[in-house]
Every structure is written in C-alpha cells, then in structure tokens.
Length: 168
Image (tube, rainbow, N blue to C red; front, side):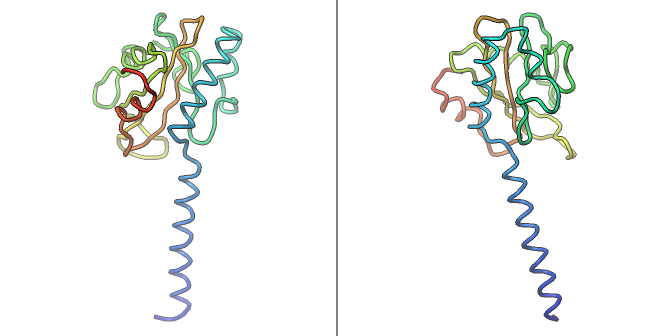
C-alpha cells in the first residue's frame, strides 16, 4: 500500500470518528430534557396562555440541539405547540406499533416529578422505526402538559423513571 493511500484511509477514519463525535454532541441527553421540560413547566405556570407563543417555531428558545419542548392539553385532547401536530387531537395518536402513547404521556404527567414514556417513532433523516423516549410533566395552574423527547435505543424508561424518584 502506498503512503498516500495510508494517509487517505487514516484521514477518512479520523473524519468519520470526528463526525460521529460531533453528531453525538449535538444530541440532547435525558438529563437535559428533564431540565428543559422542568424550566418550561415553570415558565408556562407563570404565563399560561400568553406563554404558548414562546413554544412555536423552529427558532423557539425551547428548541435546542436535536429536540424541542412541545405543549399539549390532555383534557382538551389537543396539541397546543408542536412543529407538525399543532391543533390536532392527540389521545388517539398511535406509534409505529399501534400504541396510543399520548394516553401514557397524560398518565405519566400526573406524578409530582412527571415521567418518561417510550414508543416507536420516525426519526428525522432516517428510515425505519426508532425508540423515542419522552419526558412529560404537568404545568401547575393549567391543564397543560409539557414534554420533550430523544431517540435513544439504549435507554431504559423504567430506569429513567426510578431516577426521577417518583412512581410510574
């Protein structure tokens, strides 16, 4: 093998490894999701309906890395702020395996610490079904729920819920 081929292969390997690291760094973590959803619940508890506009649009301060906080109302069965589902009924939505996961999101939001729910969903830019895990909590003084999700094939929802300290 020529020296130029060795350098070309080494360069490819290094750039591939670097791109994987960059992509991983751009992915939100479960801890970040809990923090951001908690902050969003606190903000909406103060602003109520007037604060919903802050959650709309790709440039929302509630969008970061590869995820975003969305807002829905279980009692009204309506998505209040979401890039593609805004205004739609949510309780009958099914994941790729037929699970009505918004019913689980509504139930998990009732606990003092909120909760994590796992379901299968389409991943932007990829083909197939992927495990998406979403953290949800209720907003005090409203009928709203706030949530954000991440794609993590290795995450265990039961372990994440135990970490929250609540019963789910």
